[in-house]
Length: 453
Ligand SMILES: NC(=O)C1=CN([C@@H]2O[C@H](COP(=O)(O)OP(=O)(O)OC[C@H]3O[C@@H](n4cnc5c(N)ncnc54)[C@H](OP(=O)(O)O)[C@@H]3O)[C@@H](O)[C@H]2O)C=CC1
Ligand SMILES: O=C1O[C@H](COP(=O)(O)O)[C@@H](O)[C@H](O)[C@H]1O
View (tube, rainbow, N blue to C red):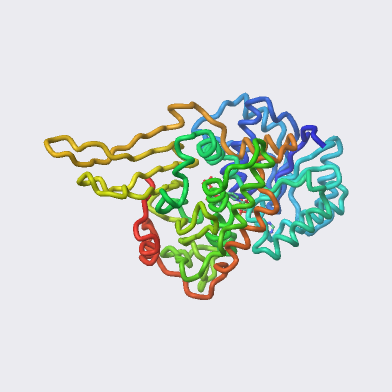
């Protein structure tokens, strides 16, 4: 089935993901002439058409800072609202009536994972699944066992080619660009290994808290929310071997292979934290042990990465919002220049102010011959101009039935295997101050973290 979908159904249209990412993506697709089709928002909340379009307008304005009324009106003319309970078969019957003219609807599950299976079952029972595609948000299940069960439920309703497991980091231009950096630059490949790299750090920091989705977040935590998926995908892109041949299948197979060589995370080298005041938020259990921060050390059992630690940390209410990878190279074997024992750092900025910065040593001005660190920055906005947002690219792909930028089932299974030992640990989470880099124990884990700029 390779024809473009002809309707979009957004389950969870009242939610945070739709507001932050999906409405702006739909607006942009409309602007590009890629979305002239019905868009049906589904939720339990009893929204009318006016509330739906008001929410859509607000989210486009918040994302873009401005709005083109002609484009927005074209999108609004396609929007309709359908309120109903996901356990009620009549919800799907009404949806089927609204989709009578649609031959290949795209069902987007922008809902908490606990409701994925009931919705898939409802789509199957109503006959809608038989002609549709489905996009399933991350996290895909809660652990390895539940991800298998979710796969079974999906496959009972949809053919594999009509299932799209989204990890929106795979749709980010800068994340996808790691593939080009690794395999289109002869310069770095010979030193991309344990002989020359001391450690690799990945920080996914957010300067905001749970933003009204605490009830959902409290069932999830940082490990399931972003470490299991987004961060491990970035690790795979950094650590994979060059594929034996060009092409997307060989590339994805190699990614899965390296995920398979990552050792399960150890509780002893993991720090879980919770920001001050989290337990007072509406929807959070008063004794919640959910982590809003996690830092961990990961090892990859391949000759290329023998002895090289990968340090990963992510948290809410950190000092700022940024996703950065820092590759720290080893210092020169012999100290021939004073001040020359500073490691070269290669910094990838992913998703915000995208770019790459290489820090190198140059001569300190003056009579003495000594090293001084300078940075060679590349700013992708300046160098490359506008690039499309991840959700816009991924929605466009799913509408066309293209799987390249979606997560593979085997990769997701490996990711759950890796994080399983640190899920739901009974030890109390360590408190941390809002606006800090997490609990003090996390600072010690890496010895020295390179904070995002
Ligand atoms: N928010 C984000 O930035 C991102 C989110 N995601 C993923 O997207 C999905 C949705 O996330 P998000 O939008 O943040 O979630 P929300 O907590 O905002 O929930 C989305 C909607 O789902 C409905 N809902 C909530 N709880 C239930 C329930 N128990 N049963 C049925 N419906 C429920 C609510 O709508 P109503 O009550 O009106 O039916 C709510 O508006 C998740 O899988 C998440 O991991 C992925 C990337 C980013
Ligand atoms: O999947 C999620 O990702 C966002 C972070 O995405 P980004 O593109 O803004 O880096 C995170 O805020 C959210 O909690 C999580 O569900």
